[in-house]
Length: 298
Length: 298
Image (cartoon, rainbow over all chains, first blue to last red; front, side):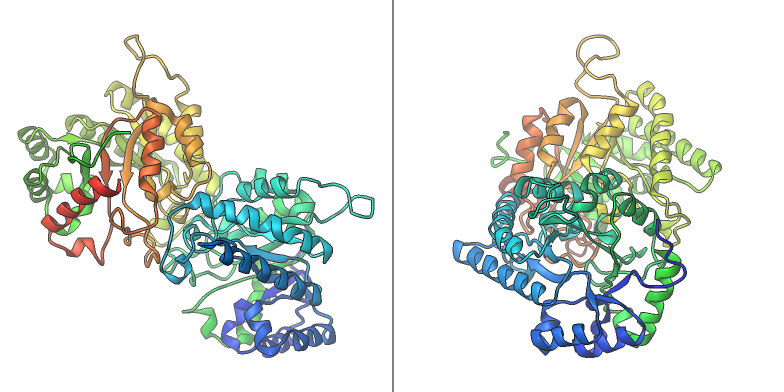
């Protein structure tokens, strides 16, 4: 297991963590100031300053992108909606390619309308079918762009509105169904990253009694991203009350040990949604804390 | 599948649903007034009016108990704490026996101190070990009392503070490990209820992609209780924002179909924690709505 205690070269900042800090150019400046080598930006933040401008900043500061957030949201109430989702995912792949991201993270979606508070269906089976078909319809474009797609299983408390893929086992079953060929690179030799894999966020999966076994099953090829934050006790909001690493009950080093034993050697990406705490603090304090906790608690 | 549309003979009221209505004797009167045949009371409500008085009321109104809530909470930071938990579970079994409950529901517990907001451990493995050992240490007493124990897998959002058993598969794995002998009754013949089984609450398990298969695996012997309410979109509180059946996104009839296909023929027990809605309404309105929704949405 890599030693993180001496530096933060394997720390990546998901830019949602700094939502309180303003536009993406300001967030990038702040990360650079703290010696952060990698980020994972959100599409709305990129669109706000422009893809070209973002690409310039990334090149200028030789930043890496541990991921691009996010594609997915495939289910829809009708065929036109499903087509729009697939088209949008293709654009997201192109943007991720332009920024040379390590993967496009997929939050796959669930019951149509639920995210807007007006669910139009109770049919999780239909949603899962839409997700399967949507990823399958997106995968060739992703392969052509050499942009791996990372299915992020979300915590079951988001099963209604954000993702109907809620365990790592379920995500890997999807990977095996849609992208069964692993082990060989398109140009020959052994590939290190599958075209379709998973993003493991400790917040979403820490509770899962099958987590260790499923991480081992995923292996190096399918483990495309590793996200960290913490589960607070009590948790006061289903979406925006994530904790800083070390402030909650997740045994993060144990999970990182499993991920690294399976061959993952990429960034630990900090993603904290925290409307009542971290988003209200000065961004330099937030980053200084991320760095300190990355060294001591990840 | 049984037809619930014509009457409510298979409706049971978990008395937590009427927490706004006062003491258990008042709650029982209200249930009787509405022709409810079964209840599932909580220990604190029973203790408040006394076990003897509760038993009298149950006999007087020929009520059945679809369950008794609750045992469990096995993990502790030291051996003395674990012993206290086992002793308390034995008392809960005796109370359930005195009330002739169908089962004692187990909310198994998780990280010591977390329920009080001061977690003393991050070790889910230790908690799960305590739960295994605690149930095993309780089971002989339960067998002697002929009181089945029903492990209730709780939604993963309660993994830190309430239960480290979070899927039906995990609960059934525990059952198979601790109580492997099924199929034969102590006195000979085929038993219909295992000594150790599960309580399936749609709120906790509706999201699970393996739910149908695990319900089939459980079978008639292990399916000891079936609880209903609904998952609201959005859900505003992790504990006390459960919905009335029909107000959320759970496809309850589909799940009831699976449970009945596996042989379950008991009560549908309504258990709604709702501090900002149903607990504030008059108890007769709550019960009238439960009855109407039981007929139309369960």
